[in-house]
Length: 118
Image (cartoon, rainbow, N blue to C red; front, side, top):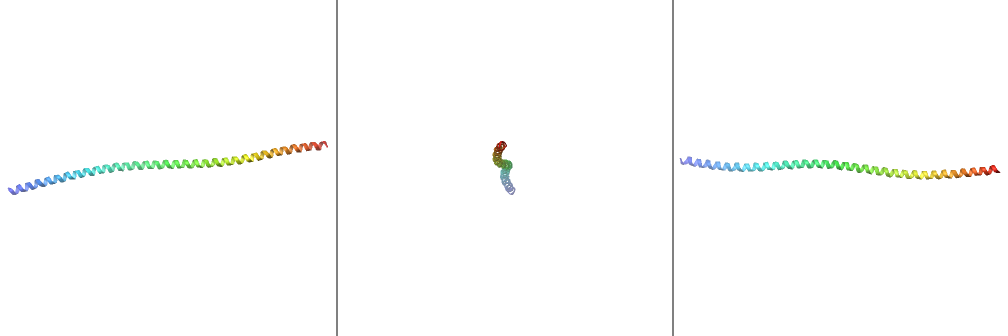
């Protein structure tokens, strides 16, 4: 009877030890679950940030394209202004030639009139 009482005591002690181990394992499982949840949240945040970064890259590309287009437009406008200035100079020169030709025609007509009177 003493031996079986001793075995029962050992069994009770083993059960208590095992219950302690189970409690410790439950705590570890809860901690691991919490870590997984945090990792999941971190992963979701990372995915959101990657999406935001992709959107910002697209916006930057669009802004860069707009700036390039604006630069091209400014260059074209400057070239057209240069062409307009050149055309104005040509017009002024042609106007002066027409005026000079008109003066020459008037002089020729006056000379013809003088010759006719001679």
